[in-house]
Image (cartoon, rainbow, N blue to C red; front, side, top):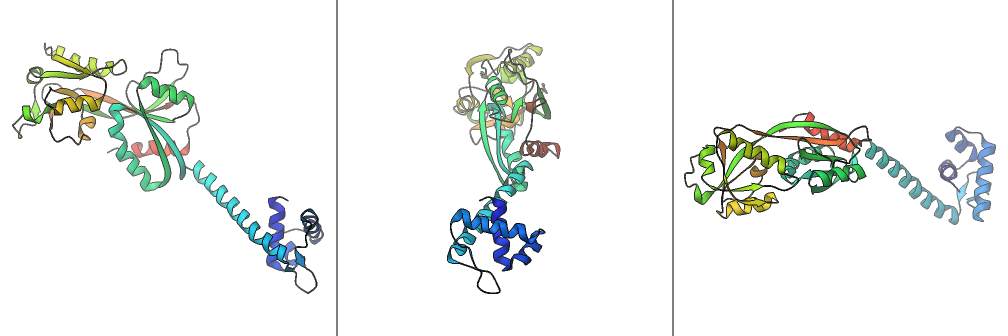
Length: 300
């Protein structure tokens, strides 16, 4: 028995007559009668009492109608769910983010869920190489990263990107070492007087080089006392009064640590480039495309 036969059966049960049911189904009466007899033979039961003018369901027929209605309803719901997933209305979206870009996700996800509350997220954190591999394996569709985005050298893939507004670098200083609450900016020379902590790993070397380059342009050499492998570590050390650092503003703005001071760098306006990255010439789900729209429709 298939879904088509279940539809026939339900139409007969509702109409109470083969003739009316055939008309409702836009088909001839004899084929419908044959389908009903075939169902009864397959099941080995009588589905309708034919003794009166109207066809009435037997007990077995009542049970089948209840089950058939449930099956048909589930089928319709499943088809609707599939359609909504394709339209990006519901489903699942896997996103990657480099550590220093995680702070760029909350507002975009908030805006996304206002439009598509049925979509669920999986967010992975890693460096460019880890997330590039995840893109290649299709375990994620999008990456929010510092640009340029670098795959492993042997990767055969290319990527597309949507550049987001540049993220300015700021100085981060322990509050206890900067008692003047009115001060909102600092020079590179003053910053170089602090013990300096830097975010530096094999995968964040580009950001480290960019910061060091700004100091060199001014003829300065910061006193680096610690190289940190994560944003959480470096902010914790700064909050403890170990030293100062320079990080993208979006990273610091999301920090809940009260013992930090974020200051504009007066004599060096350098930016970190940020973007959303995905595999070039590969299928991109509508959920992913809708997520990108949260930025193209107006980034905040």
